[in-house]
Length: 390
Image (tube, rainbow, N blue to C red; front, side, top):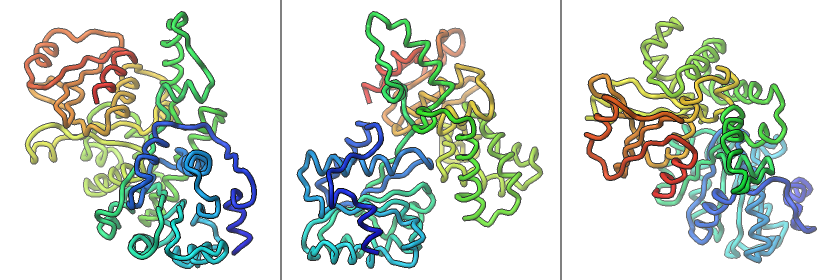
């Protein structure tokens, strides 16, 4: 095992220079909790860059924080060579290799934590008995939800999202000067069609998105939930993509696919837990919100465009706005056949009108609703103003 752990931790022997482009927003979130004792979980879609963020943050600890290289340990728990080892055994071996006592502070990075069946108990024991800081990653929200009780008060979750437009430009090494601001719209529409999966943005392989979605459906949904009819899952997902930005009836999808409403409801939750889609409830009383159709949004614009084609830029833009404000826990408003896109937890009322105007009955409805602030989002510039108020 010693040779394997040295391969995972090259900074023990030489200067470390990881590959990858920095994402300051998420690295900043990781650093914000650097001094706390809490276990930090990085979650999000497969291949969204969680491993890269871990390695870039390790670089930051070495260069900016001056942490002794031997006090930083990274391992991917999906490695078949260590699948039979517990986390406790692996970390004990690490401390033994580097002659570190249990009271010496170390920084532990555990990739693909869900490959350990009882990881939550082991992390609790480590958290309570050793001097360490743990960062862990998982691509399954359901696993973290089901195990969270063991770590109540001991954990913090950071969801890693696809690249936003500014990050997209950075990854593409595009800098738009003020004199060339007319190019923003051109690049933004290119972004709407490409999305923000880092590897796809950098290399654009045709089959990348298909392979990613297949991986999630086969490995994270079908295998975990013992579903044999893979085709119905794929058909279900395509129907969700076609309804992105719109209300989706669980019962209607069930009828189309000839499955029960309960099965349809379970499938929807599985796609949510795998981070392939998000759903937004209607604003209203509990029963009203629960019984009303949810609005569906794709986790990534590139995934949506791959399965539905590049059409309806207004709907794609609304999807992008949702991804930028999802942490504000938005709901949609629907009354008397009139709809407003988002009402956030902090009482911001938001209507998305890409390059169009709000008018007529909808404008009157929008103006009549009680809210602390109102925003009509017609462009990237409008969106940036909204985000700046968050």
